[in-house]
Image 1 (tube, rainbow, N blue to C red):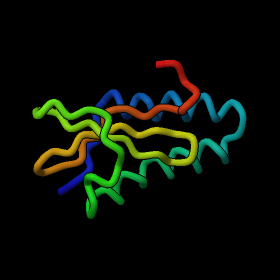
Image 2 (image 1 turned 60 degrees about the vertical axis):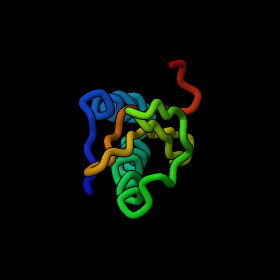
Image 3 (image 1 turned 45 degrees about the vertical axis):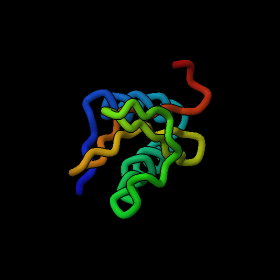
Length: 91
């Protein structure tokens, strides 16, 4: 099993890093690194995150990292990171 970041999730990271860099480069780097490494914990326990949606085809879950939410899908061979948000963001 492996972690795969969708293009949209990667763009979310860039957006968050750009926003945080305006306040502090060090904080931005620390937050982005924490967000990138967090899904690796799911390799051992893929269903550790709270279930958001399960349609039978898609099992969407979320993992919280401080004040951020990582939404991901559990697939047979991978954890697919779909989106990354700050919890105060409008979606």
